[in-house]
Image (cartoon, rainbow, N blue to C red; front, side, top):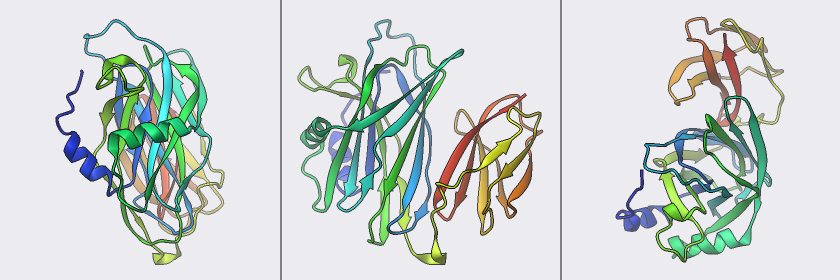
Length: 276
């Protein structure tokens, strides 16, 4: 379960040329999957959903609650909407909270990944409350990032860690790194007049469902893609919606909890659906 840091040099080289996101939360866990748009508008806001899951292989029996830390390596002019919301799910309960901007996280990230390429900066944040992930089923972090007017190709990469000493490189480090994703490309483009609609309310019902659901939103025209993922991040269904009220057949799916996402030209929104 413990990972070596022999690839630090290569990691640093990539980090200074890309947009990356770092999330630290206590417990033994890993990134299950990440849902993010591949194309967004300049001067727009897009959503990123990170799912985490347990990663316990029997090596540890000493879990300590700690603070969650979020850091984002951003191009100058890009911003993050504060507060960052998270939800941790157990079998019989859920715990929600927020991660707020914190200057100390910026300093730590600069000390680990400096020097940065000109034109980039660290945006850092820390959870309000101490958390533990021991015994969790899954967790979700919901991030909103705003672009500026610059067009081009960017990449996001995600890292997990916590304040537990188990993953620190040395005792002086305030945080340790646990897991990371591959680079995920994102393009800022004006093509097709991309318009943000991520803030528009939408519904999926009935929920729970026996397999037939309806997706409702005022504007589902213009290449709206619906995707359904299981909790391991595997794509189960994908279809294009063209009506404000659309019927979706999920009767072929096994009973359980799934994630439904809607994407329209880079704007993304997600919901949970239970199939009984």
